[in-house]
Amino acid sequence: MPKFSGPNWFSKPQSRKKSKGPPPSKGVTLVSFADEEQPPGSGGPVPPQKSPRKHHNRHHPGGKSPQPSQVSWASSEAGGKGGGSGSGSSSSRSAGGAEGIFSRQSSIRQSATSQRSGFSSSGPSRRPPPVRRPKRAMADTEKEEAVNLQVEFEWVLHEEVHKVLKQLHEILVECAHRFPVPLYGNEGKKQDKFVLTAPPEQLKCVVTLTGDSITHADINFKVQRQQQQTQRTTITQDYPWKIQQVQDAANHLQQAINHIDNVDSSYNFKTSDEVLHILGNILGALQRGRTSLVVPRKKPIDELMKSRNMKALSPNLPEDLAISFYIQSHKLIFVAYQLTNFQGTMKFDSCQAECSVPWLNEVLVLFTVALQLCQQLKDKISVFSQYKDFTVGSRSASAMSY
Image (cartoon, rainbow, N blue to C red; front, side):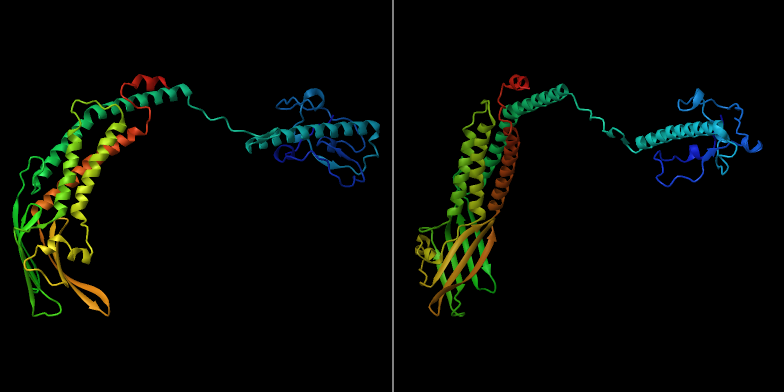
């Protein structure tokens, strides 16, 4: 039986599907290189040669694979001249063996290619399942975190809340001592003198501020309709000008101090709601007190002209003139108003002068510091309030819940 060889069998995989073209007119047989030396028409078998490597192939007769260097294709035009029956059977068996070898090599190469591309005959390959963390380890971590939060929460309730409240009390008492009115042991009745002017000599006012009232003032301002005319009036001690903003701020400050005094230093808070309630009352009082000084409530011009303070002036001003004193931030402001009737519409012109009050600046700084400290503690407690089950003494219960 002839041995089949050739480089195309191992370098280029061929399709196993047979060609559908027309059959060749004359038979095609396999002829080895040894056949070329024999005379034509002998049709005898070629003696087998030893292969350098043994390949066991179940498709080849005898279990031996052909040598690569001994197989080639050749077209025999005289296949029927001297071949005979023996030659025909040998040729058909050789062709069948070559086709079996070709089919096996092609299938091996095709399977290797499909494995490299990630697909197999059974379907696309799947990724390995992700490695998941054991549930027991996650539960232990969550339990440890809950216990740590509970410990910190109890420390904040028992230690930090009282510490911050004590600091707030000291700040607010210091702020109360800056007020020129009787407040939390402060005697008040502090007296200051200020000069307010508006160039060019349009307005000049010398004021004596005692507590929350102007006990004396010399007021001179020019009237717009008559630039040469100067209007004069005074405020006497018998009828002082009351500045309600100072008293309102002092009242709100007293409320904030009272909220702190109502908390016993030995009291143990049990929930975050208790702390948030107290801090909310303190913050509300401090914000109202600071706002009363920073944002004054401006009165309408008609309400201002009918106020009790205007009736205390000596001498009284004409009906189309009015004055006002108020506090905005750390300044004392004096304003003179003049009403005009323009085509049936009442309008007013104003001229103002201001001066800085030292104790107001100190009071506002202490208000701001107290608000920031109180807000920081409230924010910290609000974080723990998200855990609704947190109460003092529930550390073991929270740990067992996991």
